[in-house]
Image (cartoon, rainbow, N blue to C red; front, side, top):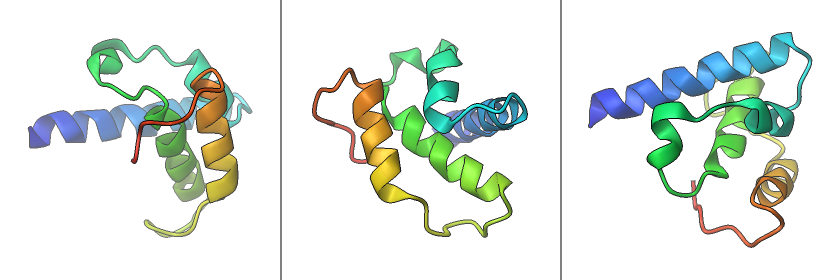
Length: 89
């Protein structure tokens, strides 16, 4: 299980690096990202929040530093087709 979580985190970091290099926002990156093996996970909108975290750290913030929580939630809802979130991540 730990290997699965580490794999997902590496996947998110790689997606964030590619998205940032392409000049994409976290939401745009999420929309362009093929979840591949992680498509089986529920709450697909979590990728957006995870990308916000990864982008913040790519910008030089310390792990756990504050993210733009309101923007992340808004983009998670947008990614979820405007439906309320079920993801608590």
